[in-house]
Image (cartoon, rainbow, N blue to C red):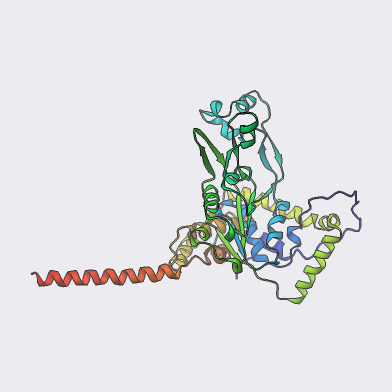
Length: 381
């Protein structure tokens, strides 16, 4: 029997919210109040994958695959409510204290370097942001480039950070990722995998951190995603619509309540949101000490082999997700149960029938070549 982790239990039990009678005051202001993550009905696998990715960004992000109107974007936007604060640089170059320890820091970041060594603060803490990439974004918008306004008005050449650098320590969400330009998609995936990227514009060069949690979503009706891009996403979730009438009715009731009074609805879920946030913080800290049982490692490797999956990202993603699953349950050792819980998320859609058939065909051809050669050699004796 597979043990359910604490975070998954929280997702499954989120229907028992407290109702607060006090009405939130209305000052006529439009607040940015994302729908509470714990208030989403069902879709436990989707929310579990999202939680595992923020507990351990090493899983490589999440790809949500499914039709329209099933809360994919709602779930992603609601993630910021359960995440702890992050350190944000106050420097124009976006550097933190760690970046100022290198030998060439004084030359690369002169203003921030002087402030830091003078004892002045160079950063502050703020809530995690969700950076959404527009489909019409240019490559220069994404990676950065020459600030054209400054170049024209001030006659200065300045290299400006792009969306990827601004997403550092935050969440980067790409809706309809299958419709994004391939060149931009490749740049995003490379930056996500490396944790940094370099921009070169003539004699100017800038290297920026890009340690973000990458989340993509797509509707397969609108087009497929290239296999090499699909492979770069760690966890994949097939999100389908709810089939139980009671659950669909509960969705209607909650959405109606949220739209009528967002402030009050969000306050009703404050206790669950705070509890989830505390568990994410604890899981991130525990992850530093979490390892994988030897039996689970061997079992995971055997599974990948039997499924005939070529990409080495398969077991890496599965092992990192298993560690996050264990840490989320307050344990420092991932077991076979953890591996079983995350295996479908990490391994689905990674097996390529084309490559399996290709290698089988190639092996038959190699066997024919050797057979012919041996026959020729036998005749020449």
